[in-house]
Amino acid sequence: MTNERTIDLVNPATGQAMTSVALASREQTDEAVARARAAFPAWRAVAPGDRARLLRRFAEAVDGDIERLAALEVANAGHPIGNARWEAGNVRDVLHYYAAAPERLSGRQIPVSGGLNVTFHEPLGVVGVIVPWNFPMPIAAWGFAPALAAGNPVVLKPAELTPLTALRLAELAGQAGIPPGVFQVLPGSGEVVGTRLVEHPDVRKIVFTGSVKVGKRVMAGCADQVKRLTLELGGKNANIVFADADLEKAAATAPYGVFDNAGQDCCARSRILVQSSVFDRFLELLEPAVKGVVVGDPAGQDTEMGPLISEEHRRKVASYLPDRSRIAFEGHAPGGAGFWFPPTVVLPVSASDPLLTDEVFGPIVAVVPFEDEADAIAIANDTRYGLSGSLWTSDVGRALRVSRAVEAGNLSVNSHASVRYWTPFGGFKQSGLGRELGPDAITSFTDTKNVFISTE
Ligand code: NAD
Image: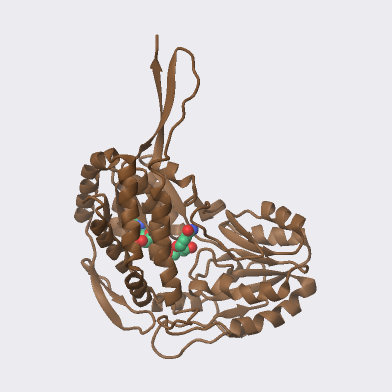
């Protein structure tokens, strides 16, 4: 239940209330932005080596807290413990990676006559980071780590349903010596805190990760002040399996590609496209793999898939399958309390089927046949999204041709890898704007200044 002041959090695996968290008001948002703004001059002036050291200390504090952070995410978001440990470790790694940036964020000297021309990467000022509930820790870090490294203070707004790890990260930042006001976490509703961060004139950049619907509103809000903006939005990603692929491996890994985090993953490969000559064989191989997914108590060491985030979200996912007639096969899900939904494979599906056009954000995958390479590319691109995807083939030329032709920001050949913090991540089309992670994201938290000094 949400009221203006608090939200009651529910453990998604048990349906039981766990704790309640205060929601910030518009006035509190303004106060946080004012504190961040006041902290900006001193933070940008910290010597690069000292800022790097503070970020490394923050990373080490996270490293020493992995078990606690992971346990919080298991209870708050229902993530399997192994995944939650990886997510906390990802925060540590992203902080370490961007801790190397302050000492390397150099401009250029460009030859001119009559003087010296140099460029500087100037920090922007207060950065608002707004994140969704599906990966509360990593997605926050992909925004705040490079922002801090470039000399900007950050106000982070976690999703209403999953604020606990973000609040813990703020404590760890304080323990690591990040100065007051430089990294603040403000739990609150999107309508109040999110909207205010977007419209506040002292917030100079928004990093927004979430749905296309809200992302469009955020973009419109930022336009009013020509505010810098990174958008990471939804996905309807294709997993393309060619007849010449290692079918056993493609089928064995396909469940991970779509059911990881119970399908609540912007990179979920929720459309499997299979060349028609091997369609039946692929399904024969896929069935035991889907039935073998270990679904259950997220605290269990072997659990591969936990519950959905809320009862409301489970109802939304279930609405895509009003009856069971198209379910080809499904995996296991525990009964009883908790927001469980089994890994589910659906066919047949027509081109206009919502399962092929909408981001379901749950453990449902549609399998469709294709004839040839051109057909596969056309189906893969028949979506407003363009975030990620996989293709399986033993033909190197085809791997490269299809990778270049699929309109998506992140593609994996013979793998489902989507995110490596040292490589760029982001979407084509309505999946987003700008890139996070990798060597270049740091400059998106700066403006380039050109200075000419006359020698005449
Ligand atoms: P959402 O868009 O409902 O909410 C995301 C965040 O925006 C939340 O913190 C919410 O409180 C806030 N918000 C809501 N209204 C706002 C407003 N008017 N102004 C400012 N902020 C507002 O998304 P969700 O349901 O929390 O998350 C699921 C979505 O996130 C999916 O579409 C998924 O694909 C997407 N996502 C994308 C990526 C990516 O990197 N591309 C990663 C994870 C999730």
